[in-house]
Length: 322
Ligand code: AMP
Ligand code: MG
View (cartoon, helix red, strand yellow):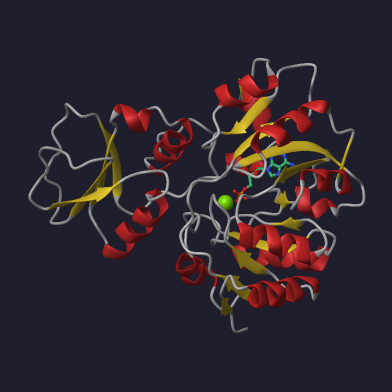
């Protein structure tokens, strides 16, 4: 199959929506990362997403909506906390887990009776979902185990020939995946299943209640977080500002939020932020570098979502891995 590279023009988005309605998969930009979309009620199309990505079937997908009220088409028993969170953060990088309506194919949720919902803050994504006429399920548009794509080229690097089209919307602003919060068990505080750029503190402030981070027990409720995340081929080392960066091999990379005072002569400085991380990991692998040093300055350590991805890239996250 030839993968079409579409622009974000109205006519190209209309064509992409037609492809979705015909049961094809289309990758599209969001403010977090690029997603690989299919119409939620088209089970055969949803299966194509799992096949193209090589995604385990128990790893549920996020349903993307174009208006907060659209959640009622796919979720039931929606609590008032959803209204508060959607009012505060939609459109934006927050995914809310609710109870799934039985009209939604079980494959979407990897068999769970819940459904993860988000309204992306990207005009091309919103137009596409609106014109598809139903929520669009979309995991990140990468091969499973690769870094999430933050531009159309990353999508083609992984999925060219395996999906119908990709809409080019430039580089993603946020660069890491959405914060996922569960509102399933309201006997206890809402649970952050995956940290992202919207913090637990912001969610707690909006809801005026405490918010918890997931424990091992909650991982069963969000199978995706238990899969091993992308770790580049090169050794990744997290270093603090007072540490000396060693000379390793003949080509290494130092990722930092500003140029460090001293780096080894064989090392190259590259700018680190949530928005650049995945592109830098892809670039380091292409260049076959021997080591990636990540400088943990306070502005970086303060970002919980980014730190979560960095510890995973360095393989020091303490979660079970597959
Ligand atoms: P991705 O779209 O590839 O970033 O992955 C989606 C993330 O959302 C994974 O970590 C999933 O575990 C999580 N997720 C999706 N649907 C649900 C759900 N119904 N319940 C809990 N977590 C979910
Ligand atoms: Mg993903």
